[in-house]
Image (tube, rainbow, N blue to C red; front, side, top):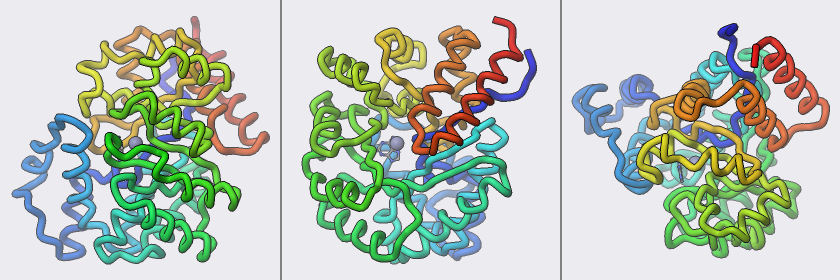
Length: 334
Ligand code: ADE
Ligand code: ZN
């Protein structure tokens, strides 16, 4: 089989989750931040997570090295370079401004740093991209509302908003006002739901926040009526199999309900979430699920097409990406 990668779309990627250990040390030296790790091996030895919160604690702590717009631009370019090598043709990237403004970094520095690098993604790395601002659901909704108001006032180059961080105990209903404001300004809406939280949170994200995609959503399978709703309305789920293993949502990749989800007719897309922490970028993720589930080239093409269907792109770009997938499929025996 030719070795070129499946042309793919990445819709669930936290830019802070692409902060590799080497870059953590490089930025710490640049910004004179003292890290609580002896060396890279010491840092990596802590990448054993028991649940979402155990990951988030380390993840937020490591962000201390991100201080200037240049740092955010360097981080974003490193991701774009790696994503391009992985065959990613379009990426919609999450940024958590509250995780930075709380440390004294300006909203403009983090947003403009990431957005500036994304602006050149097509010319420099050959992939299209867009920015989605995610709000921390374990912080007050008033803070998210204030951040969104500032982003609108500064005419930030964003296509949508999302909701992330610790899920259980922080239901979507708390963020109705934030999402109403976003929709009133023509922004797309997505939300993490049904990762660790119950199917009820997925219902809330759909009905109260009116999201057009659900991030993760794998616990939806516990509610047959919800699955019917997702299927009938072709609501995409941005599934992150390696993340689910590393955060112990499932025990092993073989236990992941990916195939059950596809068999139920769900519009599943494959994503890497926080690849620097979870053991792989999008090509690694596709390779792992292909091995574990013996996926055929047709199944891989379906997953790639689902990503294109779910992306916030115009019809011309969608047609271009679908044609690339058709070409990739045609070059491979069944
Ligand atoms: N922030 C970064 N990764 C996340 C995840 N998997 N779930 C919720 N919030 C996150
Ligand atoms: Zn996520």
